[in-house]
Image (cartoon, rainbow, N blue to C red):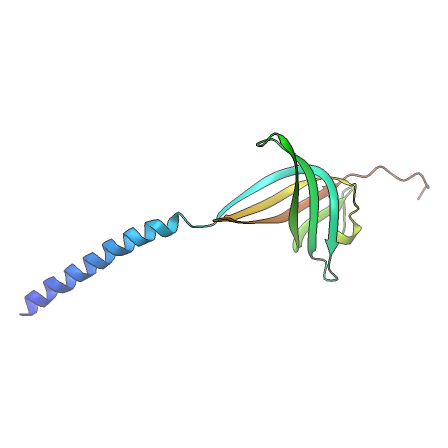
Length: 130
């Protein structure tokens, strides 16, 4: 009798493992995909909160689609922002600034989240002598 119970238990465990493998493989297809992209363009809009977080919208040329596009990136406290090589804040960015940087794109099904990792702005030196 004990031997029969052991066989049934192994059968149930094996069946459960098989079922989990089938279910698990379906879940893997729904896992979020993350990629880091380099981006270069012009700032269209800046939205800054008091804590330094916010968002920045950048117009750029999308090579994949062969058209102009606008992407909005979330700016976090970890986003590195430099203007002419000097550390800056989101509120220092201006509409019209030429910008390059890196964006982490997180895709989860139809949801897409873009987080700005690095924002670099080069501005011409002002002519007021300092």
